[in-house]
Length: 495
Image (cartoon, rainbow, N blue to C red; front, side, top):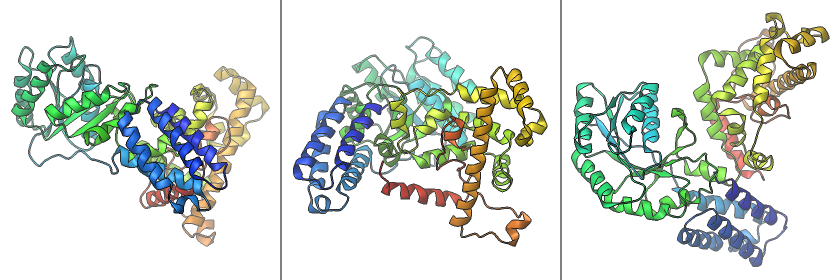
């Protein structure tokens, strides 16, 4: 999503960077390109008009035109205005002190309400809540069965109330939650292929009956320009509190999603980036704007690494930083990559990574992870712990055992060597950033503090390419502050 928009905007910025000094004509031309890029991405024309007008006004100041780095100032202004368009600050889900809290989901049929309900339940369960799902869609065939199946996969019960009216099902779910000590009820309402009075009235009746703490509208990111009419009507009738944008991992233009907040004034609370239960993310305007402008989402990578980390991995990271990388460590890192969304997902969150992916046609061959895992599993325990002992004969045997070639094994060994070099650089950087020096304690092998864990490997080496400045990083205590500071420094870099 947003790939085409991101490419168009970056091309515009590249043309500006090629000029030493900007004139009013340069700014006017750039604003014209930005306007066309947004319109072609299906952003509402009124939203585009206001966005371009505000951006142009700020860019025309003497402070920008006469600065030494005018192009960078323009990029910063576009980023600020895009963040403002998306909502300025993160809008969290606010729940009351009553038991149970009620969250009601509304939206058109096919927008992803049922899967969004399950993903939200999974997110709340991870936060220590005890949710209950209410199947109030009695019209779509097997809607309740789908909710029950998905709820069973994540361990969340579903109240069906088969044969009852949707209002009665919602009320029954609240009674069930009180009886079973469930502190959150998520009401999955019915949708239609298009807005009609019956659907709207039913949503209003359910809201009046259960008095939800939060009403969230689920919006399909692939809807296009019609999204404005849909959200406006729902805002008028149901007065929803926020938006969940689904299918943001699709390949549609997605600009309609950028119009939601500007048109309704309602904040975007969550975005869904996949089909799995864990794919629902809290929406951050700043981070989304950076990803659209090709600046990456370093903090997002850190958070994914933090979620994937275990205490054992943290200890393993400290050992790797002191003693170097074994093949077992490399295997664990490859498995961690899969947990974090695969190489394509992580690379897309690095500064300039999405653009690189687009230049490759949006495809990234991740079968190399499977091949590397097969080769490592074909090694003996001694070879895994001490890869330096792997000579020509051993490489031939490993290739035969894994169904690969000796050249593949040689490439794996080369990647292992590069990753060990990266560990050495990480060790030096850690000491430098913490003001540490090699002293007697270091020689005795005392534990060092590590800025991360084994969950965030060197992406470049796992893909058989060069290094990556974020390799080996993750999250841990005050080290998170250090990494956030590094992310702040990225703002001054040119992409």
